[in-house]
Each structure stands twice: as C-alpha cells, then as structure tokens.
Length: 457
Ligand code: ARG
Image (tube, rainbow, N blue to C red; front, side):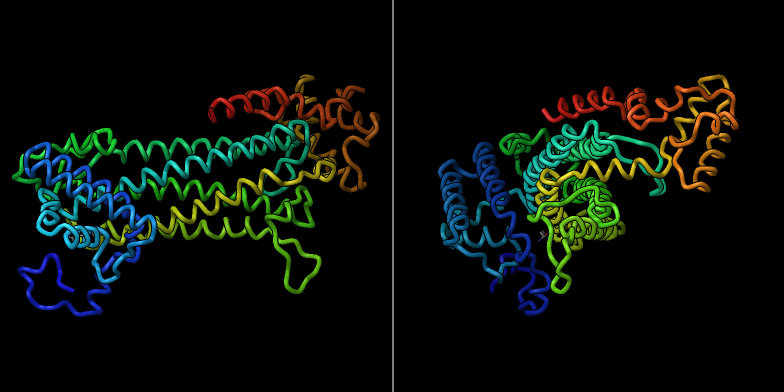
C-alpha cells in the first residue's frame, strides 16, 4: 500500500517491518476520539482562515460519515494502515479527494496521538470512577448491616482486639475513596490539550490552540509544544493510581479468600461469584477474588513497562512511545473487569455473624482491655500489661479464657481487681468503649458511615 508519507522514501517498506511498525490493531480503539479531534481541528482551521468554511464543512461531514460507519460496523479498519490516524485520513481522502488532504494542515501525528490518548483516557477515567463508586456503595451497604457484628481484629494475622465487621469494611471504603481522589486528580492534570504542538516546534500557521482546546472541553493547553508531544506522565500517573487501586482490591481479595475458607467461615460468597472444582464435589472456590489478586500483578507490570519505556527517551517524540498504548489499555481493561465483578460480589456476600463471634471469644482479644482496667485503677500501663500477660499464660496452661477466672484467682495477681472486671472484659464492652475518633465503637462507626456517604454524593 502506498504510504501517505511516501516522498523522501520512495522504496517499499518490508512487509514484516510494516507489520512491526503498525499500531492499528490496538489503537483502533480510539477511532472516535481521533475523529472528534479532527473535527475540532477542521473547525479551527476554518475559523483562522487557513482553510475555507465550505472545505471545513466537507471535512466534518466526511468525518461524521466515517464515524457512523465505524460505529455501525459498515466500515472496517484496514489492517494495512499504519495506525488509526493514517486510516482515518486515508479513508477521508479516498472519499473526498483533494479536500481530504487539507485536514492534516498545521498538525502532526505526534500531537494527534497525544491528543487522542488524553481524550480517550478522560472517558475511561470517568467510567472507572463510576465503578469505584459502585464498589464503595457495595461496601457501605454491607457495613450498615454489620455495625454490631463482632469479630477479631488481626495484626500479624494473629487475633488482636475485638472490632466490628462494619469498622473493618469501612477501612476499605476510605481506601477506595482516596483512589477516587487520585483518579480525579490524574484526570484534572491530564485535561490540557497538546494539539497544535505539531511535530514538536509548533507551526508557521496562525492557529488558535485555545479554540481547539475549548471545542474539546479541555481546561487549557499544554504551554510548551515539546512537552506537549514528548511526555506521557499522565499515562504513568494513571497507571500508578490504578496500581494503588488494584493493591487495595488485592488485599481485600486476600481477606475474602481467607474469610470464605473452611478455616475461617466468616463469609459465604454467592454462587454467582464462585466456581466449583472439576474433581472435588465439595468445593466452592473464590475464583473472582483470586483473579483480582492475580491481575494486580499485570497492572503493576503495565506501570513498570511504561516507566521503563520512557526512562531513556530524548525529547521529543520517539516511536518507542507507541508502546504506551498496550500497557495503558491492558491496565484500563483489567481494572474495569475486576471492579465489575468485585462490587456485586461484596454486595451479595453473606456474613456469618455467629462464626465471627465464636472466633472473637477465643484468642484473648480482651487482654488489652484487662490491662487498661488495671491502668485506670492507677497501675502503670507496663505493669498492668505484665499482669495481663501472666493471666493469659495461666489461662492457656489451664485451657480457659480470661472471663472464666474467678475473682480470687485474679486477685492473686493484683488486689486492684473487683467484680466490675467481668463487664470490662466483655467483648461488647471492649467494642463499645473504643469511642476514640475512627475507633470501633458504634458511635465512631456511625460517624464514619456518614463521612463515606457524604463523600459518595
Ligand atoms: N502510532 C503512533 C504512536 O502511537 C502515532 C504517532 C506517529 N508519529 C510518528 N512520527 N511516526 O505513537
């Protein structure tokens, strides 16, 4: 196929080299953004009398027609085109003749591809923001039902202190709210138009970059044309934000996997989000959570690939930068898929309150409260801690829990123990008394629920 850029290079490119060079098999996904960008470009060219208004109208009608035919499937991408930008221009010129050749005035594929990527990612970020909001809503709906469900809180995966399940779930809600902020920040910083930077140095035509930026709903323009075509920091930022989001999703997945195991039995996932085994009839596998955990590695990989691609590049455009697309597309697709299954999986998860409670009753998770009791009666905390530890050791030796020790047994360790110790180390009291801000008491948790609800609005 004759190249649009044939001129300096008269000879044919090798077929394998052509395939190697081509990006249409993946960049065709932003045909819509490419065409909308071209429409704005034609409008600007006419506004600045660089082409005539009738010429711009012809170009825009032609572009509209191509857009509709691509949408409907009537027109298919030509795999022999070098990329989506060339494909659209070739198609337009084939339809319009000489006028079609005017579209690329005062523009380069270097600023065009930077523009397309920003337009495309703006839309994708909006979609991801919606999916993360759905996830926070699912977490919140579960939290609201589990405000008094007590389970052991863990550190080192060892039973630590009693908490409520709502409190635990809300921890994730706050993480995902920060992910929303990060994505929104990324979008805000990305929302500046590179078009008009041209190849790198700007153009001799009297263009209006701000008009073009306005038409495409940007907040402004990239003020330096070399920066406009050279940097992909907005892609790196997005991949970082997505990696952090996936890290949160992966930790949550890990817990869902543990909780739904026979050993924990804290939750039961709905059949819609589990699978069976081909050999073991008893199995109900948390595949969705495992895949979210597994796919986190892919998204980290996408981030690393892009950072590594960019690190040694001299300014301005280099073909290496074509490699940004597959990493970014893969991360975007992966994150959307994960969020799409994770939110309803959490929303429909059955909570086994009794099992959580049973787990909370063993493991001495009220040992801190026992130490706090003595401390409030005047003993220095470190001494109280020692007594509590010795009592735990005694209990382990005798196969008991703290609540089962008699007052005289307790008094043998400290005269400060009175009858009220039993209420103090009751798990409900342990939870209810943790009234510090952000803590696990009903009051604190209800406050947190309000904050999340407010942020979701
Ligand atoms: N397909 C190219 C990319 O994705 C478009 C820009 C090509 N520019 C060039 N000077 N060859 O980066």
